[in-house]
Image (tube, rainbow, N blue to C red; front, side):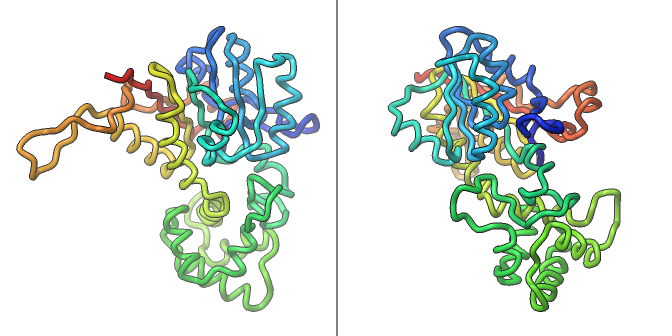
Length: 320
C-alpha cells in the first residue's frame, strides 16, 4: 500500500527513508558504467544509493512534486542522473522517444509514498481532512476519487471495492455511498471515512475505510494496469544479465509480480493434453529464489510502514 518513505516536517516534503534500500541496491549491483532505470523515483532515496555506488540513473515519476525534490537532492551527481516526468505504463514509448538503450537494471517501488499520504491536500489518507483527490499526477485532467465516488454507478463501485480493495462488504459500502451522495456530494476524505465507519463498523484494529481508500486510489491511478504494462515492457528494456527488482506493498501487486516472474522464468510449459512439456517461448528471466525478500525487524521497527513490503528479483536471461 505505501511506498518506502518517512515524511519529515518542513524541507522538500519528500524527506524520506527508502524501504528495502540495501536489499534492492544489492540486487541491482550498481557500479561505474552501469545504467539503471528507477521507474518510481519518489524523493530519490533508492536512486541516491545507486548513484553513490557509481551507476548512471534515469529516474521516472508521475508526481511533479517528487521529481522537483529528487532533482534538488541528486543535483550533485551531475549528468549521471536524469529525472523524467511520466507514468511507468508509458516507459516503452518514453524511452523510444529518447532513443534510449537497454538498461543494466530496472527498479519499481510500487504504491503511494508517505509524503503523498501525509499531505492532506493530496487526499490519499482517511486520517487527514482534505479533498477526495488521490491522483498521483495532478497535472492533467484525470478523474479524481471524488469523481468516482459521486458519479460511478453502484455496480461499478462494488466491482472497484472487490477487485482493488478485496473488501468483503463491498456492496454495503457502495450502497452507503450512493445513499449519501443522493443527499449531497461527498467532497472530503474524512466525509468518506466517517461514512464507511458508520456503514461497515469496526471489526478489528484496521479502520473500516482502509480497503475502500486503497481501492479508489488504485482505480483512479490505474495502478494494476500500469504494473502489468511495465512488467511486459521490462523484458525489452533490460540487457542480458540485467536485473529487475520490484518492491510491492499489498497482495494484489505482489501476486501480479509473482505470477509474471513464474510465467517468464519457467524453462518449459506443460498442459494435460500435451504428450510432453514444450519450451516456454516467454522464458525471459531466471530467479535465484522464488521467495520474496521482506524488511528486517530493525527496519520495520524504525519505519512501521515498511512491514508489508516485499522485494522480488529476477535476472534477464541471455538469448540462446
